[in-house]
Length: 623
Image (cartoon, rainbow, N blue to C red; front, side, top):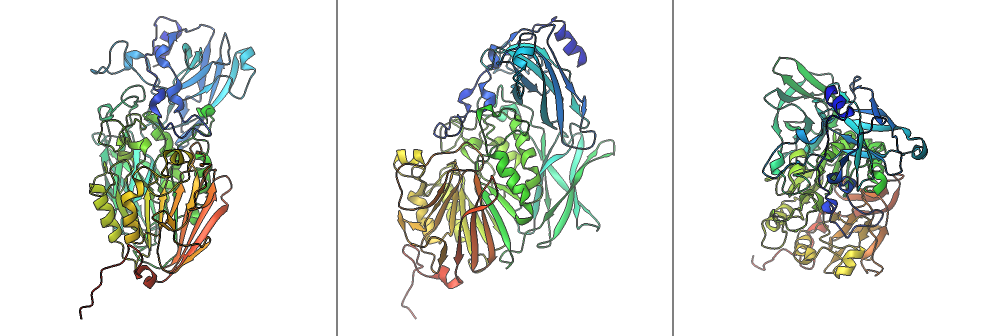
């Protein structure tokens, strides 16, 4: 590896990185407020790179060996010397470190000079030091996570649109790049089951994955894990198939069964190598689910569209996901008061740059390793033209749902069809997949009705519907321009089910703001209360909670009659079930974790059974 970089420094090899720009990878053109909404990596026109290796330019990274104390991240110091400094100079992080065209695999999709790979992150060379433009010297700090390969830093002049390769650093690497990392809990298909999914560099031909778990201080159990991955060929379009591709590693899922309700367990991830030795993760903790219908305090977090952000400030010039870390850190701070999280679509906004999924799982690891982190499919996970989705755009950058459905477990019958139901104590959740057809007569419509009908409201009084796109109501500006204030055809068929089965609250993302809608049916508010609802369930409350972190979306200047509360800020919602007849809803801003909107619901079982318009069971006078 070192000889490779020496080879370059002697200018004996002409390195041409022939990539391609996919600035259209993020085509969610309607969400441009607070940032341009374009994946920062797609702005680099690497296909225009020319060799400009300069003998007086240098880049040096340290330490050479990362993670020696067991951490899965490390701060790296990079010293840069640019002989002809400019404000347009930038430094890219490449992994694997050997990223020249000779390492690119040949397939029928590639022609010389072959397409290769985009950097995983970058900063301008004058980051935090404008004097670089005069002196040509700067020290930059990058936070790297363990991503199963070594790293190198490359200095470019000419800006993002006409990059010229000036210098390449030494390689650096984590002590164990294949280590098991970033556990993600999720509810299984049964109430007494928890699943653990994690990422590693170990294929089953090299090591056997498992989870060691049990009550703290007692004998531990070992449960085997299945292993999945996905190849480049499973990506449906560019950039995921081309410049955005990076080996994703291996994903292992173990099912921890026969759990006692509301009990605290410890667990750690393990791999038994073919040599007989073991590789271990650190130890984590989780609390098992309550028995369905159990009368105890239960706290649920729901939000969408969080995205990822870099704690070292890289890539963030574009203001891509400005609130992602605010929301993440707010949840981490309040983790002792959270039982389960629902992230309802648009997770990292990788948009075909596969390296960003590692960044996202690392970001949410403090949350997802401690409580079930349930996810839903959004347009930035699934949408790719001509791949069977309901929308014919390339919002996923060619991922067509593969990374999301492989890296996160959901208790769906078919994870490629990301709809599922799950129970948590007194809650019954029906999670829809808006990137597939939901209209009456469709496979998903039949599932949604079956899911809603399955709720035993005596045991689980709180019936929650959630989906990524707004199938109900939103006062967002672009929905207003389209004339319906929701996804076209969204509530045409769905509202019949919400009313028939008396859904308490419906949650949506996609629109990057917060809005609460009155209890509503057929465009009419059916309850004039604002802060407390009681008695018969005669309409569903709709909540838009897409302000998880991505650039914000403006509200329409038209005033909708159903809107109760609006907030153009980053935030998330929390449901607290005190018992079978009392529920608290809260909306918190991510910036301070304080409550800015709330309401309560109080009712008895007979209020759910009560006959309401279009929601009455048939009756007979027969005796």
